[in-house]
Length: 313
Image (cartoon, rainbow, N blue to C red; front, side, top):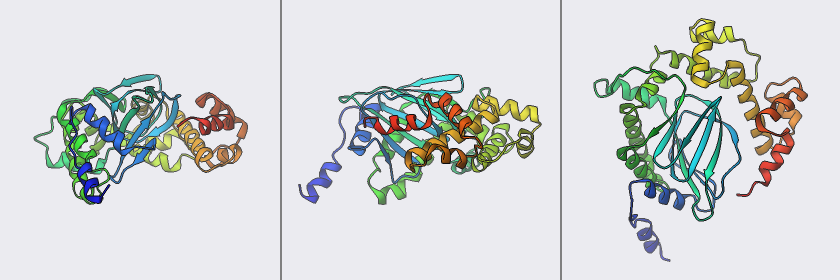
């Protein structure tokens, strides 16, 4: 095929539901051919494709909005379970240790999804620039994760963003503009109060989120809750209450999950042995690490890693 024919084929418009979930699925499927994950050249945007349901997987999920073009997924935070499919989006407004699994996927109809991380600097700028256009309804749900129905304008914006994948010149110029539009639509919708709670410096959500940013850099260290509360500018009881309300776990449980998730990454991607991984993430006792790892991931460290390595693509 000539370069001219290839360009013409690439520019051929999608048919059917071009701007709905079917269009989203078609774009993700085309971009992810031959891979399970594509980190695109658009900042914070990754695409995902799986041909089979997956086992529960634990990881840290950054503040993000997640959409599905095809399939269905389950995400667990603490004792709360969320399901979403092509008619909904999942949003997280804070870094959260989650356990997720793909529920519906097959060779003929693979799971096709995307994740776009939320840029809180851009979000704060939008709030400052558009105070009259962004509703200020009260925020009565503290947990930093939710599932919401997706409306056509937001779905259309994501489809236009995916049109830029593989087009580095266009994505550099237009990608930030469409991402800004997506954030604006989120702020105007039902999840606007949740996002403002994280972006506004006077809010408790903002105070806890900034403390979590600090914890992400110091999770290996011994932690005292009173010191974290002081860093957040809250009493110990208020900090503990708001932290648990937003993350569904205590600060110590949160730190433990961060340590275990990082240890798992070290063993899986950097081929570090279990004892070394334990020490690198802050454990003093390899046996304690192994016990807590088994409780979280369902198997001892090396057995779990072998299972992950042998998983079919």
